[in-house]
Amino acid sequence: MKIAKLIDRAWHWLDTSANRSSRQLARRTSRRSFIARLGTAIAGMAMLPLLPVIRALAAESLTETGDPKSCDYWRYCAIDGSLCSCCGGSYTSCPPGAEPSPIKWVGTCRNPVDDKDYLISYNDCCGKTACDRCGCQNTEREKPVYFPSKSGAVLWCFNTKNRAYHCTVAAVIGEASEGG
Image (cartoon, rainbow, N blue to C red):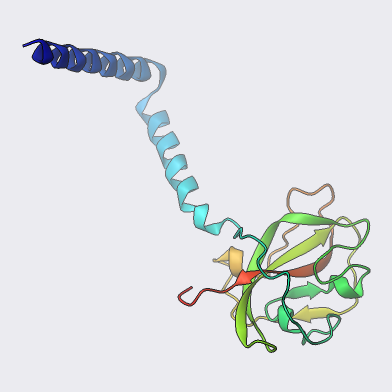
């Protein structure tokens, strides 16, 4: 009998707390504002797949061949912009005076040395005037702009001190998986 009373008290407390909380919520918000907030939350969750892909650097000991200052270099299969390797930086780092944008787009390129596909993170370097050397527009496997995380046609210099585009780097972030 004691257990039944404890369970009854717990249910009563839960019912009373839920009732009190829902009444307080109803006093503080209207139906329209609740629906607006719910809609915003759902739209925000729908945008999660568009966030940049973050993976651990797994290809540090990668064997490569080719000229990083050429648009034909294997890492540049989906690049759209000027190569930082021609503008005072390297294929993985921005030149002095330019800052990397925190937003990236991704592509999958095949390394001719080991004949494997790698996930490449393309990152715009911002804050200096545009570098007009080594402009490349490779669109292999690029998705339309409605899938912006895989499109190079978007200016990615968001959340930087200066939104001026300078050049683009291409970092290997891991081997591409079979199914994706």
